[in-house]
Structure formats: structure tokens, C-alpha cells
Image (cartoon, rainbow, N blue to C red):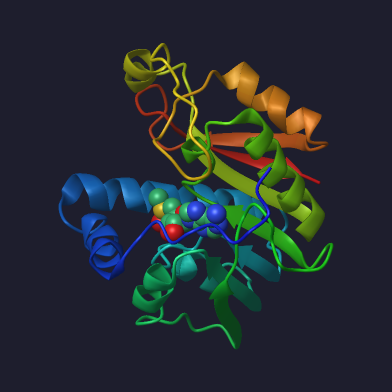
Length: 215
Ligand SMILES: C[S@@+](CC[C@H](N)C(=O)[O-])C[C@H]1O[C@@H](n2cnc3c(N)ncnc32)[C@H](O)[C@@H]1O
């Protein structure tokens, strides 16, 4: 189990590259737009929560979605100071906005501190089952309402290439893995969540899926 603040996986150059990557061509812009759209659908299904934690926020790709969907208080957080520095260049128009360094394995916030947590593009980097359980337990502790998690699942064209690859477990934030939907869903249920819905970024084609969970 991990309890210390994990090390920064991004440096300044990589953080800026991450931001530019999602704007660099039509394909990445379209995918980013669809990812924002599924977060919007999850917010709507969750009743447009007002107090939101975006963890990990990366360079803030989802802030415009929170801004235009009823969010009144946004805590944006990431382990990476470099990501937070790049993200802070474009602050959202949300009156109660703050950003800070937080570790998903040990979130330094009280129980039920926020209504909704958006956890995008993180969990498929965690290959050790006990560590995934720790992250899910932390998300469930800190949210009072819903958690939206995106990750890679099988059951689509892209997943066929990935799902049978050998997983070499590595601690913390590591190489991305594709997992079977039924195993992912079992993890959510074992962590105590109810699965409300799921939204595929490119249905039938891409591995990206967002799950909306109730605590
Ligand atoms: C692929 S990026 C996704 C960022 C953002 N959610 C998005 O979709 O654009 C993964 C992020 O996870 C952050 N990260 C890695 N380990 C973390 C940890 N232990 N706690 C919090 N954030 C972490 C990285 O710094 C990075 O910003």
C-alpha cells in the first residue's frame, strides 16, 4: 500500500506537451471534445453537482465543462506541480476555484468533502489490484454523491489488440492497461459503489469508457 505523496510523473516540458497534444490535430481535438461531452452527460445524470473535485486535473481540459454545467465550487488537483502550473494559465470562470497538489492514493481532504469527483484518464495506469482498490476507496470516502471514472475497457475494436497483453504489475502510475469490463465493474461493486451508467467515447471503436458511480 502506498501512503506517501507519489512522485511527479510529469515535468514542465511533458506537461506542456500534454496540453498541446490534445489540440494538435483534428483526431485529438475530436477525442477531447467527446471526452468532455461524456463528462457533461455524467454531470447531468448526477443532477449538476455544485461542488466538484477534478482529480487528476492535468492541464484542466474539463474546466469549461464544469464551468457551464452548474459547478459553483471547483477544486482542481493533481500530483504534478508541472501539470498544475500549465493548467493555471487558463483559469475557469468559477467564483470558488482553487487548485492544489493531491495524491489519489491518499487524498488529503475530509470525508464527503465534495459532491462529485471527476477522475479522468488515471485508473488504467494503475496495474496493481490492491492499489486500484486503495484509489477507489479514497474516491468513495471523499465524494458524497457521485464519482466519474474514465479508463480503458475491452469489448471494442481497439481493445482486441490490448486486452490479452500480459500485464506487468508496477507500483503507482505506470503503463496503461486495458481490462475486461466485467472485472472493472466487479472492482467498482467491491469498493461499495453502485454503477449508475457508462458512456463510451467512441462506441464500439475505442477503449475509452467513462463510468458514473454512486457512493
Ligand atoms: C493522462 S493524465 C490525465 C489528466 C486529466 N485528467 C485529463 O484527462 O486530461 C494523468 C494525470 O494523472 C496525474 N497523476 C499521476 N499520479 C497521480 C497521483 N498519485 N495522484 C494524483 N494525480 C496523479 C498526472 O500528473 C497526470 O496529470
